[in-house]
Length: 423
Image (cartoon, rainbow, N blue to C red):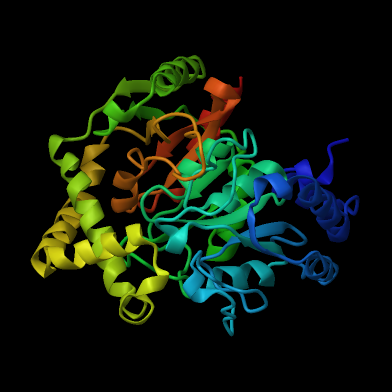
């Protein structure tokens, strides 16, 4: 029988509903796994095993009853420190949970701890390693969440994305990552950096797990992705303007995925976005860094020395670019968002790389978000699913993109893709 810590969230929930698994037993299995592997993985910014046991014993009945979750440390928690990956905020104890954490607890989730994030979900990485090979990064900025799901510490975790911070680490760690349409999961209680970009999402071991978790905390019905669709999807194979970044394993993966999907009945065609979408490569960083600089007014003015040099330079450069440059970049982003539905007309989803290749060696850099920032800026839902093993035995993922608001369809088609790749 599968150890409880290795179950998908939906499988664990079914066992608990059937009375064959208790939340405490599930939590204990996860705690044993943490004891065995956390010394290498370093997924947690805060962890208290006694608090986990108490929470499991008192778990509410709800859509997430008894399910362990990891909470990225840019989301507030009333009973745990929230340091946002920065020494400036060490020991900070918010009065209340972030809205999404509050909804998760109200639905019965058991918070296992706070997971490591890069500095303010942007620059300086933490100590987390890739569970598949500790010599490699788990990706970022949702480093601890991705690694924790992959390592068996919890079946569900919150991540956030401003460029590629959910999709890329999920792909690097071999789990499912879901970045919803912008604004789907409420951001109250998040340390927001880029107001027009920051998106809360989730990571899990299956697409159905993501639908369950995100649906519960956004108060939405995201469907059952395991339900077989009534027709095959129309898929655009979109290498995106960032294709020159693709490593050989990613180029081979796209070909392999197309073959498997065609065999499963999908209707596929190569698809390039209109040339003007390449302008997002300049617009996105101007919006991201400019808004982050404005939102970090207190840190820049009164705690400047606590910022890493790289982040401080990035924020100050963005401010120096001026209001007109920021406004022009935001206008470009808004224009392309409005144009995107025409950009994928005739397709249900686009299939595109989740990352340039496998997780880079070392933990001082979390990888290039070149295959992610465009979709984040377009405010559309994205899902990455595991897609095999690349060099050095490290996971590969592939990304599914759908129109804004079509999250239920994005998840359903993501499961179609995942099933075709597993066949």
